[in-house]
Length: 111
Image 1 (cartoon, rainbow, N blue to C red):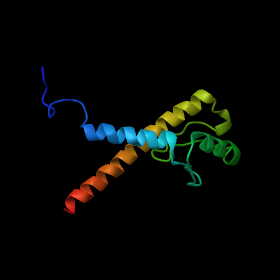
Image 2: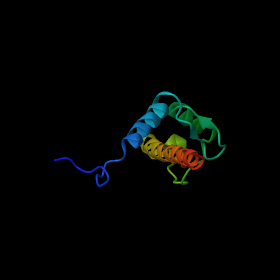
Image 3: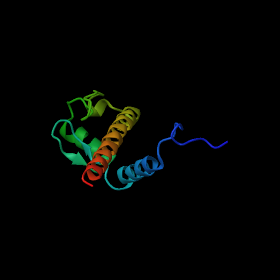
Image 4: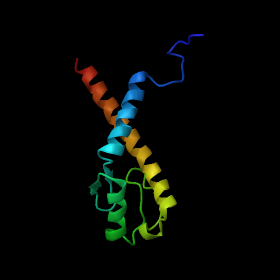
């Protein structure tokens, strides 16, 4: 049975492709994760983690978007870092999707 796409719970095909592109950019090119303390940006998880462990050793790691607190860098074992990066990854993904949507709306309004 064929379903009407307007009633389907699946996202539009463009959104699926855009989400895949953003995932690819984040995983293979530039994560663009930002430190909540000094606002420096990092291309990889490793660089971000090392920055916190060396520069902000005694500060709690927080999400730059929602300010969720995790732990001090040296207290965060691999599982805790994985939790943090999963959280941050989602925040970055949603912010990039919103940026693309704003640009698309702006382009459509200028036509």
